[in-house]
Length: 564
Ligand code: HEM
Image 1 (cartoon, rainbow, N blue to C red):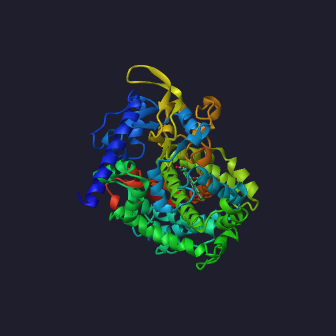
Image 2 (tube, rainbow, N blue to C red):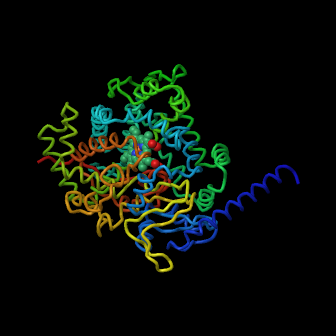
Image 3 (cartoon, rainbow, N blue to C red):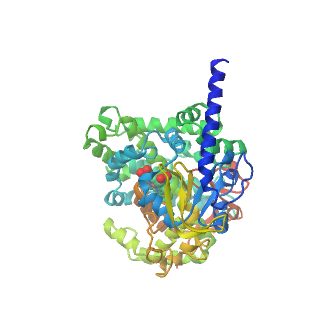
């Protein structure tokens, strides 16, 4: 037998052995109820990957409870978890025992480099220690003027479009109102913010629709991950059978349109990152050719990061390659997420005109008190945080549309996970904890947890901002007695030691934009928007059913909101 064939045979035998071991270990989960596999080859993976975000999670949770078993390709048992106590255990109480599956980390390494999102255990602790100081409350507050300026830029562009009726992919209805495809603009505004906030780098995506970075990121996750065909579903589902270096090799080399798209974005982003982080001491070169420091006024996360890094010694310091990866990570983690959340907020408000008007009334009363332009950032935060309906709308959108809808985890050692609400096994037994063998793959369904009726009430699927105003509402910590996640008992920004570092930045950005957009514009649904798809593509994206070729889409009818 030639050497390549012998190597192939050994690899095949190794896969069979791994599969056999996994199946015998995972059969320990066989008593947990869950859906039947569609086929041995695909398990339930096609339903999860080809459906909309949360579609099967909601259905299965209803039928089997908040912890359920499903099949991965080739018969492997996996768990889906939507129970608050189980989530608290995995992310907080016993967090050191849980890790991202190594193959998932390889995807992150391919996309973003060896930065904080990829790092595990001690390496992750080292990255987090250096990065955390750059993401404090004071730092986030200092970015408020940048958020305001970019929101102004966006609103003035939309006003121009409304007056001229000149939105290229708009369906004009007597010129006014105009249909605007929101993600096209909001994603670019958000990218400009993260470039300036994080690196003092003026990307200029809002002004220049041809900007290199803006074009590179446009619909990147959709083109790489959305609507996978059956072969892609199978490949993704079997990835865990391969050793991580093989996964890395395949990601870097196999000819595939989605992967090629990711590789080309990586090249562009790396180029930008390299221009920011120079060889000498990892100090960035301040290459702000497109307009200087501008709105961030000399304050950016990268400068803070470099200063923080220089105060660390030897082994705790980040290398240049790691610094480059942090630039790529923050650029990616910080823009699509916030932009998609804002899009879904405007979608819900376009559907619920009563909520939109109530929100506008509250915003305009605040504006009349001078809140919008308060120079003192502490006062601004205080005033904004005290707008009850406004913040309820934001929380409700973060609950209903968590853009990071799934998080994958696996225990390093055997564990017993406690449950908030007992589940019934296939043998009819009621259990209030679940034994999980080391290495069990789990989807923590943030989408599912956010619709868990035992936490959020029987109307968990409804957009109902008022629920946050009701002190007896079961979703508030005092009733369940559980603290899950880092913001309002939600898992949108995750929780514990891997929680989102940029959550305050995201929140201030959402608050600033929502304030201005609802103050100035009126939004209503179009026919296309009634066919909105919540597309699972790493970060949930809005798309229109049947129009996948057009990428991210949320076409809403926009007009100037009349003043009394
Ligand atoms: C609505 C907006 C956002 C959402 C929903 C969000 C959500 C998340 C989630 C769920 C994670 C954890 C992922 C995991 O453990 O698998 C995360 C991590 C992270 N996020 Fe965000 N994020 C948002 C905005 C931002 C912004 C604006 C920044 C930066 C300015 C940022 C930077 C990060 C970083 C650096 C991590 C990695 C933290 C670590 O691994 O320790 N995020 N984010």
